[in-house]
Image (cartoon, rainbow, N blue to C red; front, side, top):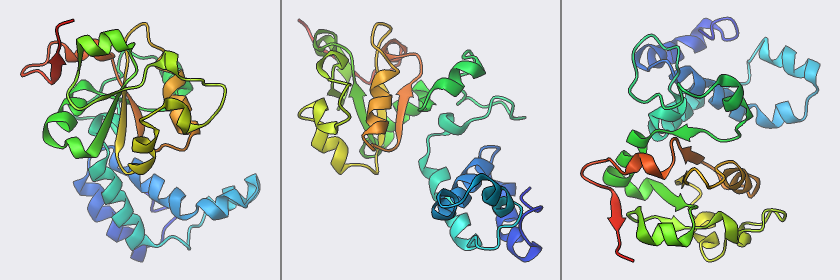
Length: 226
């Protein structure tokens, strides 16, 4: 893998990591290569890009490996889990979604297991954004989450300030994973796109919506009497 574009003295550093990683690790390697070549690719035409990918002498392999390991370790496994991988993965959350529908989405889906792990084990890594209406949020919500109802946002203007009082939280924590949680009646397509257009990185959507959190025990929800 990658041996058709890299010389042997570069590729063996990468192979050591590929052997130890799972089937999603090559995706992180590809991301690392594209990140290094981003400026060159954006400044090149289609034909130049094709020629560039036939020979990649400018790629710093040590930087590539380090970047790949960093994104691999910080990305929730369900986001990059591959349906066709040989080993059975408990992280695959989108097996019931047609590929055509997934291709239309501009954001990844995250499994309930990964979200629960983020809430319980490493809550500093994530911002949980609940886009349900305030009444439902007040009745039951994820511990530590924030409420930004879809109905309160003007989507016609691409400005993160439109989300209200939580805009500064999203702007100041661009290193954190932003998990969008909604319900069946909430539009789980418009809001994540809006965040991406506002240059908020690491946006993902809880697959199955808020209801998949209800049966989790011990609970990660706060129940309030209204």
